[in-house]
Structure formats: C-alpha cells, structure tokens
Image (cartoon, rainbow, N blue to C red; front, side):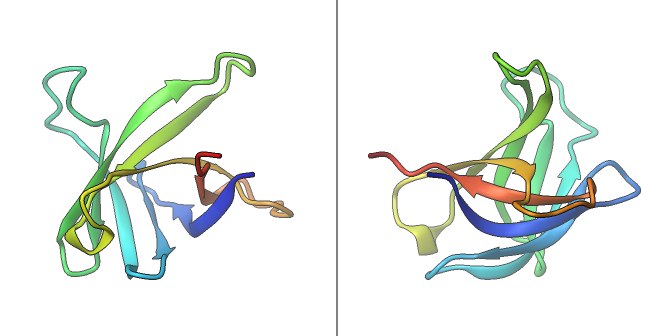
Length: 109
C-alpha cells in the first residue's frame, strides 16, 4: 500500500513546493525543473531542502497502464542511511485540487 511521505503543490515555474515528513528527515522541499539537463541519465527535476541542500532528483515518466504522465522521485540523504528511497508524485487521497500532489512511497513487501 502506498504511503504519503509528504505533499507538494505545483508552482508557476513547472516545479513543486511542499514538505517531506519522515522519521529522520522533516524538511520543506522544492522540486525544480532541471533546465541544464543534457542527457536522459540526468534528472528532469532536482529536489532541494529549504536550506538549498540537494536531496534527490525526479524523472518524467508515463504510466504503462494509464498512459498518464507522472514524476518518479529518488531521494538520497545521509540522514536516511545508505539506501535510496524511491517515490512518485501522485494525486493525494481525497484531494480535489489537481495542483496538490502526494509524495507516494511503495514499500517492498
């Protein structure tokens, strides 16, 4: 079952602003378009904390079944240990505003 690690709102520059809430990391974040992207290996977005520390990246994807675009996120930060955390931006449960998205984590079973 997907769990919301936080919520973001779309911004005018094509990015997102919001909060990520985990036991070891509670920060305001900004997901900004990577306007200097030069290859497919580089992220479409960079994820920064409020104090401008880069903690991840985001890639534009298209759902295999739905055909809808979404953003796949990867987080890496020393406070989270050696593992990376993978999540997606998706509609927040019970949210009518299409500009408000949840950071959804699917833990392994």
